[in-house]
Amino acid sequence: MATTMKNTMKTGEPPKGAKPEEIEKHIERTRADLGRTVEALSHKLDVRSQAQEKLSTVRDKAGSMARTVKMLAMRPVTMIAAGATVVVAGVAGAVAWKRRH
Image 1 (tube, rainbow, N blue to C red):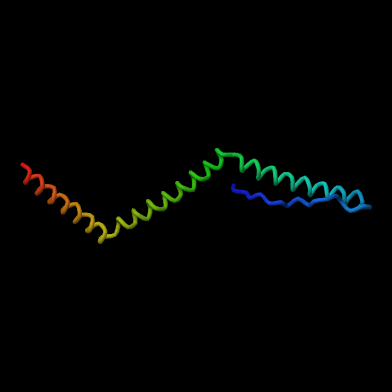
Image 2 (image 1 turned 30 degrees about the vertical axis):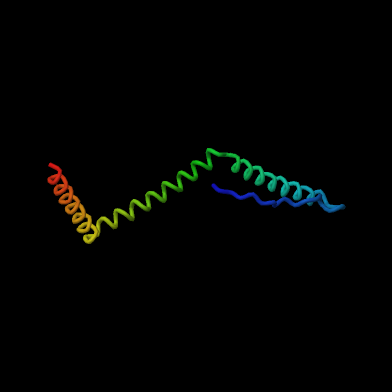
């Protein structure tokens, strides 16, 4: 869960002459803002969690790339080209080996 730190806290105090209900709401908002700030700071300082998130992202990308390569390998033209490359490399290797021996 990637969170960003924002300065969402309202500065100052409740207005003078505020009713107790307004003061309680102000306190609740301040606590909620403070809780979000502490959570964001905790996340930024949690190196293990950040590393796991990065690893998960890299794994997802690698899986996507593997699926793409697999789909490309299933195409007949790609398979023929790969086969031809193997044959040419094999012949070239055999010729080189024959010349040396």
